[in-house]
Amino acid sequence: MTRAARPVLVVAEQLDPSADMVVDELNQRDVPVIRFDAAEFPQQLTLTAGHAPAETGWTGLLDDGRRTARLEDVRAVYWRRPGRPVIADAVPEPYATWARNQADCALLNVVAALPGARWINNPHHDRIAAHKPQQLVVATRCGLRVPRSLITNDPDAARDFAEQVAGPLICKPVLGGRLPVDEGRELMVATHYVDPATFDDTVRTTAHYFQEAIEKAYEVRLVAVADRVFGGTLHTSSEKARTDWRTDYEHIAYGTVDVPEAVATGVRRFLAHYGIVSGSFDFAVTPAGEWVFFENNPAGTWAWVENRTGLPIAAAHADYLRGACA
Amino acid sequence: MTTPLIPFGAQAAAPPCLVTTSIKGVTWDFERQLNVRADGTPWHTSDLAASTTDTNQDGKGDDVSDPYFAPAS
Image 1 (cartoon, chains in turn orange, brown):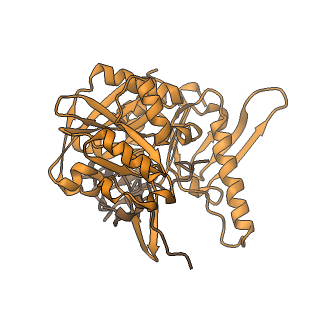
Image 2 (image 1 turned 180 degrees about the vertical axis):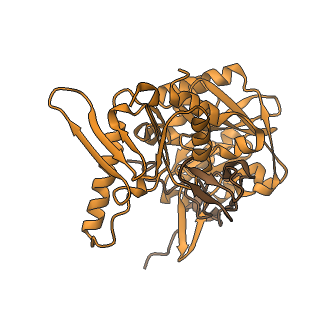
Image 3 (image 1 turned 90 degrees about the horizontal axis):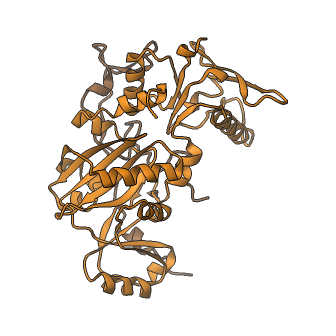
């Protein structure tokens, strides 16, 4: 395989429109692609990797039954929330769980160790970059403004914080997660306003994340890819959507905005800090025009931003993966 | 017996707002390695639901089920 034919691995679930968009752009650039879901390993996907005693790097083959990639030729990897390996039904527990963990670890870490391959994003880096408490520290270090925030399990500390803020307060989860309250029924905790008068001993049950509520003219899903930044705006028209736009998609109008250079610079520093190439950042823009960082979703969704605004986000991914930009 | 306590932050839990994109007539194009509609046009060019919580558009919500996403450890 010539260097020009070096493939990009796209590792994602089959019905992921972001992956579809990137593959489409790579196809248009005549960049060979091998796309698979990690869930296809080991039943539909074959991996054979060898390592020499003194030469650095795994060599071998990755074969999906239609296409074969030589590991040493892989140009780049787009790793986007794939499923976990699925083991054959014939393997009983606990061997099936053991086998899945073996498959999971081997596939990810052989691919992650390919020397010289570009990544969007290496999931080892994503894992660290995904956590909100760290993000606030890094964001401010990178010159971005964040909301005044408190993490505590002390209701008195929460009341003191409310007094300091002397304005509306919100509570949001430190970590995303579903609450399977009944069989087949899962709940989600979204960002919500809280009344300090209701702070009680249930605050003590775990860590709680409180912030000053930021007044919003509109919000931005800022998608960064390498040194490029794309601003997708969300103008909300209901109280629910204004509080957390994920809770009311019916009352959002989408658009675009030029990202101020100071914000773009902060975002690039943020990515560099974590060693990641792409992120889906959430910002609020205040009525005074100030951008306030909420969080970054390293493997966040962005297909809908391009789909509704035409911002060339997938093209930026493809340019990076084929090596056409820094 | 201890009285059950629901964490303060979790008292606001509610069903997630999941919006999905139709996959009716959508098939997998093995050559192009992407999803296409019946007329052969890429599925991603149709109107996509603006969900941030449903990467693979199956309506189940997977923002927290990705194995590499966010365990605190």
